[in-house]
Image (cartoon, rainbow, N blue to C red):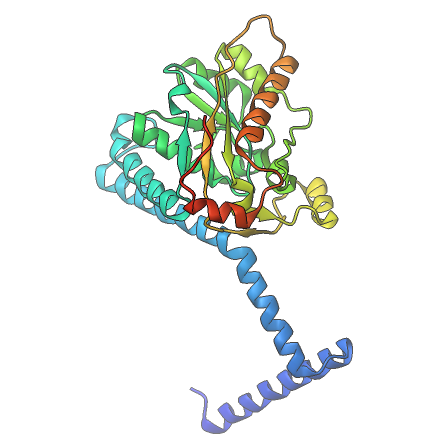
Amino acid sequence: MLSKSESHTSWQESVMSSTWLTYILEQWTGVEYHYLYYIGFILWVLNIIFSAPFLIFISICFFLNLLLHIYKRKNGLDEDFSSKSWDNGRFMVASILNICGKLGHGYEVHGMEKIPEGPGLIVYYHGAVPVDYVYFICTLYTQTGRLCYSAVDRFFAKFLGKVFLFGRDESVEILKKGNLLGVSPGGSREAFFSDENYNLLWGNRKGFAQVAIDAKVPIIPMFTQNIREGYRTLGKIGFFRWLYEHSRLPLVPGYGGFPVKLRTYIGDPIPYDPNITATELVEKTKIAIETLRDRHQKLPGSILRALLERFDKHQKED
């Protein structure tokens, strides 16, 4: 235990170090020390604004994973999450997320009846944070009891393990078993670098179309109104684009968590056609999603307008 004199000496050294650091910063920046404190406080607030929505989203995910882990241990379940024994746990998590969607965004789904009873590939626009897709699969499960498997970016597939799919053969097999599979061809690039004009950033990706052709299933287009207003990124800054292209790491800062109105619209399925090529199917899918966007989203998007829509009971017809 430190003696009183040792404690006093330690405090003096700490003060001297702090004063010395302040002096260095003053000399380097040419700004008086009390202004440096104000600048530091502003930067701290900005950091909270940028990181809070993602920290909240991650915290909710960890909390729900903890609930599922407790459910698994209590019931002695295995790792086969698609088995019937997980039904109660899935319904509990889906119900919690449905409440989050209702409270946070007044979340709605329009066109659920357009989803065929059999297998189908759901293709959607990727927002900065795809909470709309999470709310959609939860609403789908609580309303119909159907599961929707999810294909994600390779980075997140490695990070999250085998709960999510990304291989073409594996995806075809899931569809052939009569399941639904959700995919966003734009992936991380669309999430980080699309903007309030909701441009689709698919590049030359056509693997999803080949999956639909190989599995002989329809493609179901989907778009969520205001998803880009709820959460945004700093993707327009050239440095972050350069960093992503050279590392493929999701290091683009984001901000948001605004309680805007979110409505997910499901379009008419694009039926399986044995005579169509993957390139042609990509174009048909892109046109279908852009049609949903142009019909239901005012461009460019506006955060204020999206917030006010929480109080607007009027909606566009499907």
